[in-house]
Amino acid sequence: MNDHRTASAGTPVHTPSARAGAPVPGEAAGLAEGLSEAAAGAEAAEVRRFRERVGLPGLVDVHTHFMPERVLRKVWNYFDTTGPLLSGLEWPITYRKEEAERTALLREFGVRAFTAMLYPHKPGMAAWLNAWAADFAQRTPDCLHTATLYPEPGVEKYVREAVEAGARVFKAHVQVGAYDPADELLQQAWGVLTDAGIPVVIHCGSGPAPGEHTGPGPIARVLARHPRLRLIVAHMGMPEYEDFLGLAERFEEVRLDTTMAFTDFTEEFMPFPRGALPRVAALGDRVLLGSDFPNIPYPYAHQLHALERLDLGREWLRAVCHDNAARLFRL
Image 1 (tube, rainbow, N blue to C red):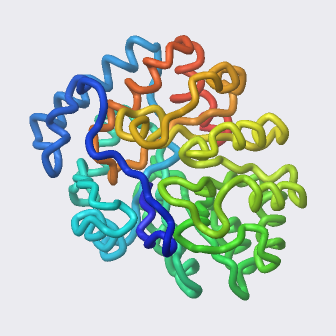
Image 2: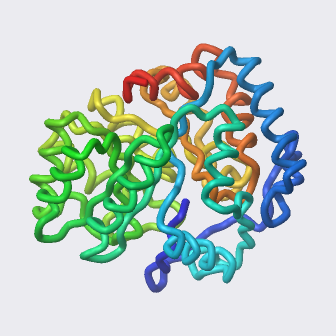
């Protein structure tokens, strides 16, 4: 979930003490800090078998994290030191590898396109992060050129510059940034992205802990002003799953990504309401695969197995794991 801010004073944070259920194939190896080369190879074979079962030419993952190394190390350090938001939970980073190794591993998994989800937590960071992401996309052709934004003077200018430079997806993190997405400073930037048809992956749900501006209300105010804005709600909007399903049902350009949803890890402390699965099935053309790679405490294959065991059918899985994003990003 990559939220490394502390919870608000007095806000209880509920986290799992252990993951429920039996491990999926290859999962045990991921409990150690990083996969060995042999374990990574075994997992790649498991992902390949999944793709063969479903009939997939590859995977498109709209929620993977690549960022400047010193920023990523700070994120990892937060997990290593069991930061306040984790409430004592041990969270091993399964893919603690160098950048080149991480991109190579995604390719071994058959991920034909992925993202560099990065985000600022204070003013003055976003333009710098966008410059790094533009360079990363140039040297990593299978990464969708990613950019970000923050409510600050000049945001419309650097958002427009990123779009003109070829950005294909934006990341917004309401929780880490601790800002209101309906802030007046962002309105022109949202307008630029709406007009350009650029999707925005946004963490606006209240998981793992609520923030002042998380939940469906603030982002609904954005959509009231920009109803054609292409939002991809991260983590299926956990834990307000049904509220965000409602936004997707109301606004044709709202989508949801599967990041960490339905996994044993998340089901223990923010379970998805099973009665809402028919709504997920009905929105099958607007649910996209996301993983949170590399900052996940279980192997990549587990996210795929978690989707498969929903038993929503091969057609739904093909759409979620490949076709929907391939159509959205014209791959």
